[in-house]
Length: 81
Image 1: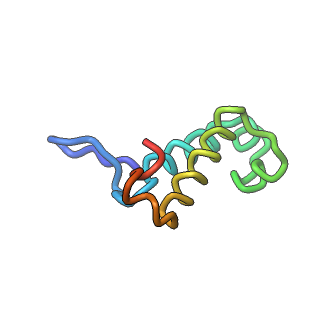
Image 2: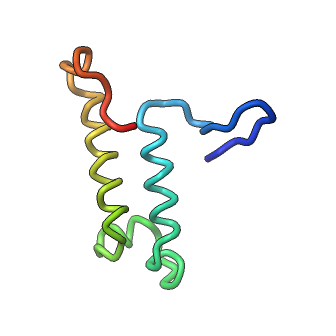
Image 3: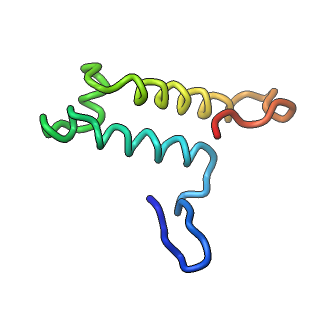
C-alpha cells in the first residue's frame, strides 16, 4: 500500500521485505488470471497461471523471508531490495 504525503512517497508498511511483497502483490493483481478470470492471487499461483516476473518476485520474497530466520544475516544483511 503506497502513501502519497506531500514531502515523501513510500510504503505504509516499513517492515522487512515490504517492498518485495508490494511488488509481488501488484504483479499478481495485474496478471490476466486475476483480471480476466476473476481469481484470487493465491489460486493463480497454485495453478501456475502467472507471468514469469511474478514467479521471480515470489522467489525473491521467499528468499527475503528466509533470510529473516537466518542467524548469519548479521554478517550478510537482508536479501531483497
